[in-house]
Image (cartoon, rainbow over all chains, first blue to last red; front, side, top):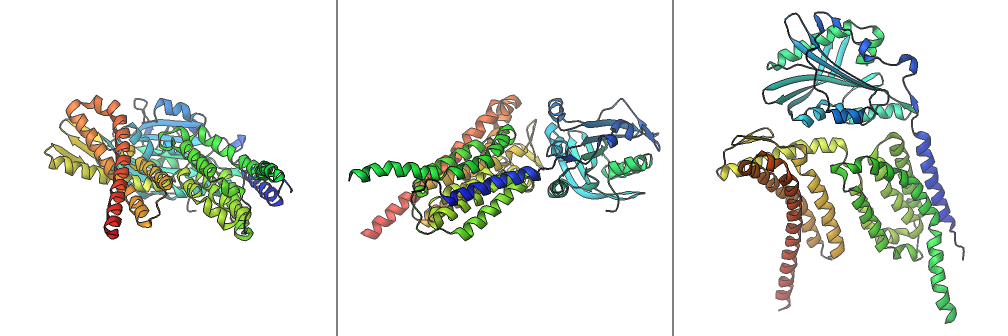
Length: 228
Length: 293
């Protein structure tokens, strides 16, 4: 009697082939080369339109322990507060990684805010109208005691704006299956404001001015390709 | 006679050896997967059950290993190899693109394919339970958790509020925030009860498998009652936490009592399930007794 069955050998070989295929399919090439590395600090102008940086306020970030954990995943984060002539504030927070990863979910406002005791009152998909075109965004309303914080954010995989969840995963797949690792960015603005609609309107104006103050290349980086 | 006695253990070893290539293949596929899981999501509270589920699957396969030893009456190579190749492709996409659901879930078609190709439908039937149980090894996909968590939380807080209000407590609710006396409590994601539903379902199925009831009605009633029981137990848990906070203060409610209530209510859910099983057994015994008279 033969100890090694041919069928069993075939199955074993198929399995090794499966493992090999998975290895070969794993994307290794990063979309961004060293030459076009992102630098958030210089990319976003310190003043644009009627807005300039106000260093007295810092936007909400993930907790310090979480940030430490994220350092492996995240190459850069930027947190700034801008103020206009009327004394109105808008907080800007950007997270960038050249290796798009599940870790992006931690920066997702729907995760990041409740993790620090905020209640989410609303989450709606919306559109940000800018002079360059429309940008699909998510609007969130977070609240903690008396702090009412309307938030507008979008997330980018590679060069396209997407939504979290399945579309995010599919956008990653589109790159991954061609052997590339997509970079990703999450751009968020928020204001502490009781007037929800007024705040969203001001955030729209703020973002429009910000995009106008940037070079075309940086704008494509931060907002993806418009109208795609 | 002598020869026959001698041949038996030898054949047993040979039968074990013939599985070696398959075992080696499975190890190459899944050691990296489980190693990665152990280093990542198995460390989180929501997926801490992972290794236990894996052990349960392995144990049930070991239990039914006899089916792997007996020579097949008739194999099913067509469906077998198709399933195997499908599973391997699913694995390759999942593993390379970081889709854990595909990577882990592929284990079911891979094992089913191997069984069909080597031991036929008979082999598959003998090992159906551990194969089905692989479902519990697959982490629930994020979009499903997102879609289910919010409505569950909403329902849990609503029912808890109404019951407490009916009991005369000064309670009010705004979305998923319960206000009782001077305290404000947020019904968090962890309070949705999704985790306890998941664990209780897994445990319930293991229990049924161990009892091996023949009646489909008996099995069906128990399976159908797992989720309602888990849901009810969770409401009681949330209410207990609200009451502990109200009577004993914020610190007690958030500290020890929080974890303890979770454990306690999980046990209660399990006991309710066993109790239901006892009632069904009693009822069917009595019904049978009456029928006999």
